[in-house]
Image (cartoon, rainbow, N blue to C red; front, side, top):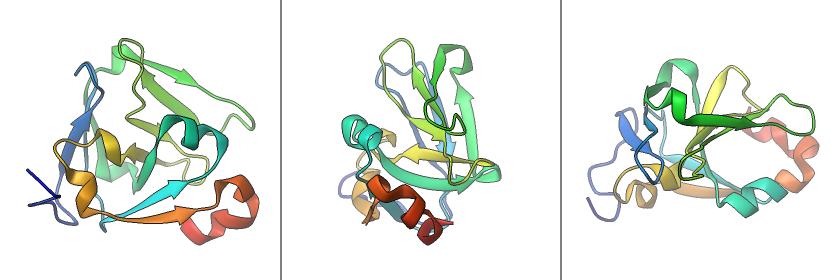
Length: 131
């Protein structure tokens, strides 16, 4: 798959970590992703695809995950303890859903998404725009 070819909204997309220990499926309603400028997202290179819990499935690798929290402790940043990749997390903005890193989707799925900026440095002022 190149240039996001074949990727469509409402379809299940697969992805995972670098080593393959963690595999997931996500079904985004729209091909919209967010590029956040907060301190953790900038360092991780996370491009956000936020979905409700019924649109996310952890296929394998629950035992390979470890979790990092900070600040309010609401967001649960999951990453592979084998390769260190951050394929998904439970976001503070949507604590009943999941946020998948579009860069961890298989192939070149990211190219199919319209990536919009999100001002995570001013999270409290910006969060309502994505709820």
